[in-house]
Image 1 (cartoon, rainbow, N blue to C red):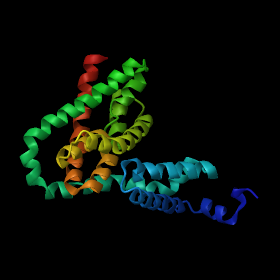
Image 2: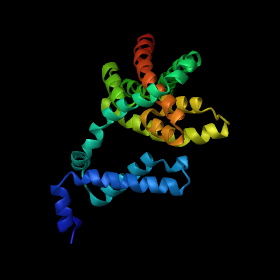
Image 3: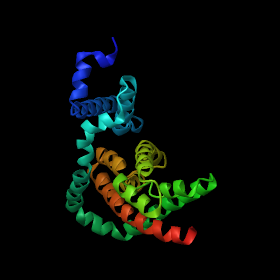
Length: 239
């Protein structure tokens, strides 16, 4: 008997909201693995959840469209989740105000390097214009990246995928790298995660410390604005 003929599977297909529960179950399992691995960055819960879901959908043959129809509530909640980051930022406003003289130049440098590295790599590998423009907003959160990509002539859907991959790799690799470089200042660690790995990096930052998460939130938010401005300015000069 094929899996599609099983009564339980028929129930799943007729009740798409079950995919929301499958996603949550995958995340709970990913969190358990993360704790068992002593919070190793290589077992990042978001990356592990993605791998588990891809494996599950591949084995069951479920189209992504069917899965998304049931799990899209999580997608809808991304906006409110980002807005909620304003609360810890407000609670740490005095610390942020004191750090402002060092914060703004670091953010500008990070955004500039992000955009220029994307343009440089795309040019080095001879990518066509549309792919080059799609890579520019790789380090900002997906909804903003899609908007930037669409406005400058890139491919919004591909930009969202590139952002997700950038965020996962950033969250996985940044913390061990900063540990090796002996960067222990929570503010610097958070800012680096926010600028380079946006929302996924910010989630990892909050798992480290609340101060790390706050500075990651600031980095993510301001980097999105700076990237939008820099992308237009640099592209006008380059292309």
